[in-house]
Amino acid sequence: MNKQQAATSPTDEVSDQALIERYLQGEDKAFDTLYQRYRRPVFAYLHGMLPGRQELAEELFQQTWVKVVKSLRRYRDRNSFIAWILRIARNAAMDYFRSQSRWSALERQQDWLEDPAPSPRQAMIDRQEQQQLLRAIDQLPTEQREVVLMRLQDLPFKEIAQVQGTSINTALGRMRYAILNLKEKMKS
Image (cartoon, rainbow, N blue to C red; front, side, top):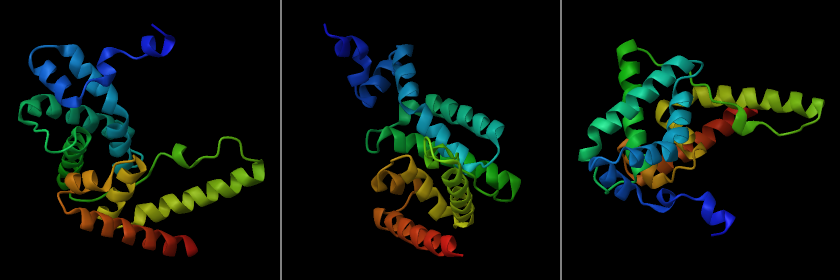
């Protein structure tokens, strides 16, 4: 057995559906594998939906996974598993927004925008551009902002459409308008 084979566990290559079936048959480790596969994109999505509200994002993250566990028997392989989980996370965030009767501004983690070792001058320029972009993203209509956030998580448009409960053409259109809006906002 070489190092690469030793580094990958047998569950790394198992499909989501197989892991779900194993979990439903009582194998808790199968759910741990699913959780490890998808915890980062789910948290990043919620963090992006709830700017500056780390504790709330963590709370909704936990609620999302509790709902996933409770609903797992009803999951059908029609949609990708990550799209299904993000739909649950989105619903949790929307429920929160409805309960607050307001939408908060959207802030993103800035890690994805940062250059690893810019010069001090370039770092200052980059920070200003990042802040301008983040403000522009904050000002996008909700549906466009969601599409941008999900694309930043490398979610395909087909799955974004599933999460938003719309057609793929609508998701693509929202991204197109988001890009146009961002370009316009970045000019000013």
